[in-house]
Length: 197
Image (tube, one colour):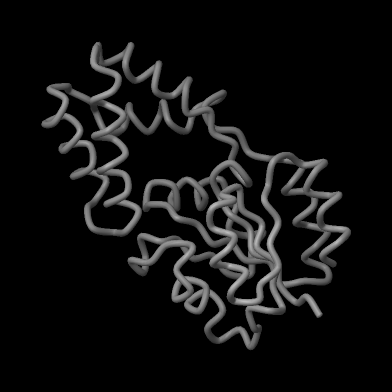
């Protein structure tokens, strides 16, 4: 019997247009080498997602490695502005309904600035528990990350559904006997949920 539904954050709860974000940053800070920027940004974001570096260090490293002069506040204003980042309002509506019957958790491979954005938008109120990778130095699909989330809830992995946009995570998640849905769009999610619940 399903007792909990675990949602991912990026491209599930918050829909992010990475292309528009990259183009705006490159244009605003006059960064000509897109390939270098993307490589450096990804390397440092992964470190930040693990809690290995702070947001200030993330920006500092990008500036040092690309020869740019990005300002932290401006950078995140671009990142979180529309249309780069949009809240999946249909999904929020569904979560409100699901909370009547199930525990609803948020489990994300992400960082402190994103966590602060969630709190700023008061999104954490829709979840019974929120766990972000930077807090514990673990990421999906590591089974220890799921165990941290479920610790103290009395809920077993086989009583959960994971909804995530990363299909490559699912084989490891299924080994925990957890049901999975790969999120592509809202209507597809509704169809797939009928077979899980």
